[in-house]
Image 1 (cartoon, chains in turn green, red):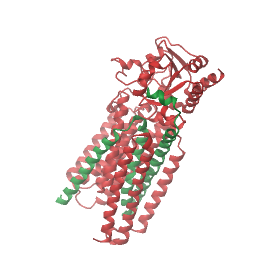
Image 2: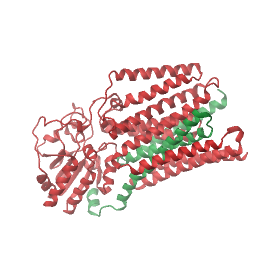
Image 3: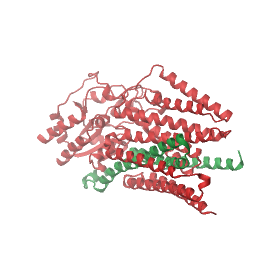
Length: 112
Length: 479
């Protein structure tokens, strides 16, 4: 390995490790109520793989590579679009409730 | 600096901004009030990252046609793939019923993992015949192929089980464990040969791919339907990791950051879910109890004396109570009775009864799934109480209405020596009286009798959750 390659590898590993720590820190605060939307939201985020799929599709040569990258782009887009839409559908229902809570009596009870 | 250099820098900054949006988006999902906004922030980051990538490809095509060789046909692949995948994703996400949502999340997870594996496979085709491959490149490619493939087939099986296409019961293949171990062995040996020789080999990577695909199936098939939430969460974490590996393979920082974020989140969720069921993740993956769905175990009454209750008697108890706590469980989710329970609760509230819902962390099919189902049925969000908040209130409750919940209410969990010991439970037995709607005396996931059902204060209303609630609603109306 050349010094440049070593640098690049160490940089990538550093980013990877710090991102894992950020993930732990951010996500451990989420209440159980939101776990399903969170799982769905996290599921959409790994749709970022679409960026990679687009880059390999751009330079695809030959039938096999073209077929592989077409499927990769389609898979990744399905992940992104479906993931965000279904997460939004779930969260929309929560927000509607929060905007129109039951009147006073309930809240007084729950505060006790 | 050439124009293309400027574009490359700006695109990288846009990717970084996208990654920041993902982190902020996840942080805003902490509270119901900001969660939807958080998802939009995250989606905005995604659009930014994808748009920047399109500009990068366009810039490379226009400004450096020789070095990248991007042609018009490349755009056909990209646009074609986006239209096909986007159309499928949009359609399924919009038409799916909220009760079928876990299997859809699993399906989206499968294709995400598949895309990550395909990136590594495509990259490998370029390396073959190009001389020696560096060890670190080889490691990331092999890990991406293995993890991506396992999550692809594993998530498809999990989705099929939840959808009912594949039986939810644990499917035990004769010698299945042996097959699983053999597959793992084949993968390790093939990977070791690649790492040591450094020579790219299509047959070996194909062998690893095939072994990992089959491994995903043999890993998921023996796990019962009730454990699928934990498995989906684990596979979600796997996909994140596979995407991070893909980031290493094509040297792309935004894939590494986003993948690692999801890998960490999935791992935490998986642990939380397994903890709430008093099981370890390893236990589930190996098939500890080996049990199946609650519905599958429909036996007659066993041990203790059980008091059966009619809908009319139960309705009177509910209608003249002051505080009622509803305890919804897996049975309610399966029977899709969330609208029926809301209807009954509203009727009771009109009569001046205070109604709350006690939500166990693993009620339903995924953590938080019960909240989603009840929210879909227009149950006011403030009425949903998490376990720690509601447990002290059971003592003051006149009636606890348990609907299709079993193990999470079993007082045996407070004593050592039972399979559910130590599992956090809802203190339903502390309520002044208890009504349980359940199809039969069948055992829950843990495969033990529930002492709650033989408690003197408990009346059993034997019915499917939906029918039982409809009968109760009709009886309350008639009062």
